[in-house]
Image (cartoon, rainbow, N blue to C red):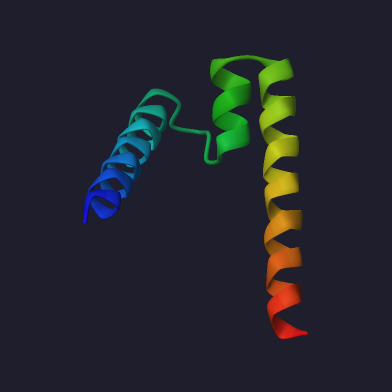
Length: 67
């Protein structure tokens, strides 16, 4: 039960962060563009590659379940 409460709080905080970024930078739309506008090019580069690695790991996990 506690793990559901903690994960729900984490999801709520993430949603509030994205809502604040959306209000502050209305033309941006993704984590990469929020980081680029808010933090600069280096942090956006790091976040962009983290997103790519996340997609690679997720697709490997999906492929593993189907084989």
